[in-house]
Image 1 (spheres, rainbow, N blue to C red):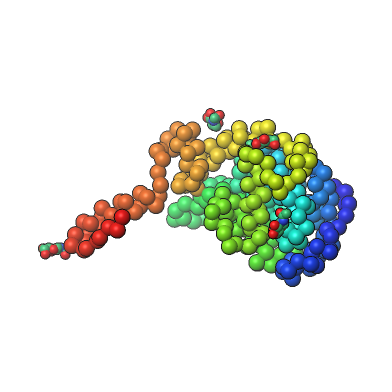
Image 2: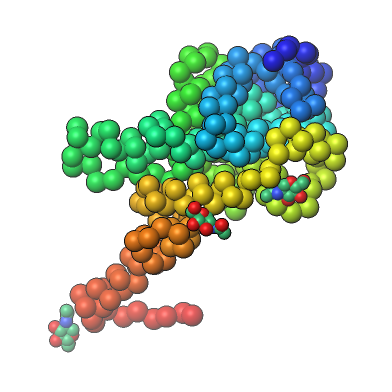
Length: 283
Ligand SMILES: *[C@@H]1O[C@H](CO)[C@@H](O)[C@H](O)[C@H]1NC(C)=O
Ligand SMILES: *[C@@H]1O[C@H](CO)[C@@H](O)[C@H](O)[C@H]1NC(C)=O
Ligand SMILES: *[C@@H]1O[C@H](CO)[C@@H](O)[C@H](O)[C@H]1NC(C)=O
Ligand SMILES: *[C@@H]1O[C@H](CO)[C@@H](O)[C@H](O)[C@H]1NC(C)=O
């Protein structure tokens, strides 16, 4: 990827939040991908190379991750105030790595059921380490950044990235959280079917979709979610992936909700134990 510019200092200097943005923000190198200006640090380049590993088995995943990053970057390029307020390198890495847990390659380092297989011989009493794919992805992204030993990635910056990835599917829980976690999620939302966002120019939508097409994203996502339910049901139970397990995985079992089952089962036990306690319903 060829070096082709620097992020504007002017906008960053004017932002009220500039103080918490890494000091090198003004000198972040940039390049163009699908005609969108993006940051181009060694960490960002490594993230691109990492997700290129998905191309042979899951090309739809690579395209989805690149589009998520580029849609967000296009929205920033369209609003200088916003661009100055966001941590662009964090956004790039967080969006590109937000679905590491979808990796279907055997021995994926981000598939917690596979990790469990490896460690259960050492800790046989460990009940179950299956985690939702969002958590696998977030922990994988944090490890990826940590392995680079970069001085400007402190615990706070790592956590903002981790939170954005973990909460990617829980938009209603994001209110009041920091702008960087929010913009990882917002960038993923640009991927949802529906009308184009007014935050992104049409020409940018066109150039991004031309280079990273979304023509198999539904088929690929359906297969990946089914695979998650098949390979680590403990990490999909109670989440929206449950529907894929119930519908497509023989033996997965019926739809259930852990909290509902626990609480309604608990009511029956509680009445048996405390028959004389007064409980008044207010419904
Ligand atoms: C640009 O971004 C800022 C910060 O998020 C926001 O307050 C403003 O409304 C945006 N402007 C436009 C035109 O969307
Ligand atoms: C794929 O891109 C097209 C063209 O912008 C869009 O209309 C459609 O909603 C997108 N589909 C998905 C699944 O994102
Ligand atoms: C989703 O994927 C599963 C597993 O491959 C498959 O059985 C099912 O038919 C797919 N659903 C649709 C609507 O194609
Ligand atoms: C509930 O009250 C009845 C009648 O006063 C009493 O016989 C019984 O022992 C009480 N049960 C418990 C579990 O306290």
